[in-house]
Picture (cartoon, rainbow, N blue to C red):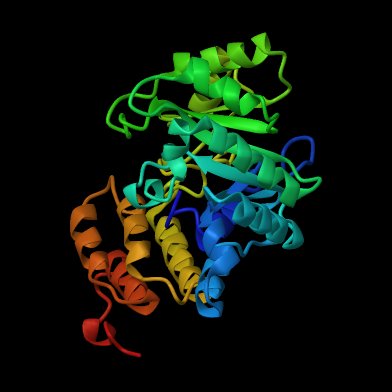
Length: 324
């Protein structure tokens, strides 16, 4: 998710979701994806512009396996960007063919790829050339203005990607209608009918880990990509914790830690990006709306820390609110 699953938030998820399973293996998500990054930008941007894009490709070892998500309608640039991601040590390459943002579509990318299957297939082949031995996957939707799964999915499967993640809505739907998980079921059946080895993941309206597992089982899918469910809840994969039983003190401590990490890792990005996270962290308790309003006015991590401290300990003298 652009401006959501950045390096800071992924690191928070890795820290607070990883745990010891009964068998001693590591917990947490089975795989992380980066925000989507412009392959064209990586290939042709100025040094300054490329440096900003490269910040979207930083990751920690705790996030492995980690997949770099790219977008492009230019085969040469996609191949170059995939090769760069291989050199950077990523575990896979994912191609975004589902983003509905108009600025992305104007480049012939994202959901616009659904309207140009021949180009989409060429882009997958280019990514494979650059990725070498790394798996290449695709994230897409069931169609553009209408459901085109019956014709669109076979085009993608013809290029044998490792995974196809199917967002169970059309581009026209955006997120305004419930995800149609019966179409994920159909995607898995199409894959089976074509005797493809590609894994099918579902995406859309999976509200929790248990909900995701149930949806995958009912649909016959091999996995589920979670997006909005993780928003404001880095404990999503924890076996015993979620927002319902994490204390406000711990929730706010993580919020502040997340903010400080954002400033440390992504100093070139607008601080306003963090504010969408505050909406997710701060809800469901008395005074949440007022606290969110204060946090929306914060300019940096220091102010955020002061604001939440005052909420938890209102007797604290307020003379130090903006002390540096």
